[in-house]
Amino acid sequence: MRHHQGKKDLANNFEHIWRLLNASGRQSLMTPNGHTFDTFAALAIKGTHEGEKVIRIEKDGQEFARIYSCCWGHTTNCYGTRIGGYSDGLDSWAES
Image (cartoon, rainbow, N blue to C red):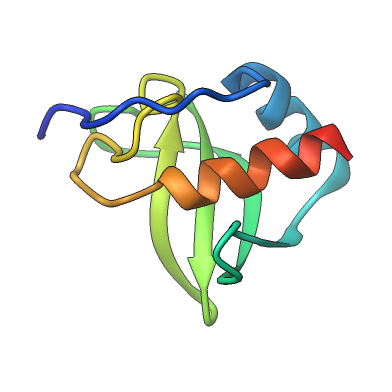
């Protein structure tokens, strides 16, 4: 696993976003740059994060990224995938 890169200043914490998604189900959202994505709350079923809460990000019906609590507030996740725009979109959605 890679280390997280960059920092994000987000209004909401991971747990709050995860609970909102878990209660509301799959959401279709948009990044600040206008990229659409689908997202939902889940629990990791295997790997180093098994049993942990995860926010899954999909683009065009395919999984693109996973955001774990340790990734929240960074521009990349544990695996080096850029997640900054998606966390911005999730943060804005939670504020609306």
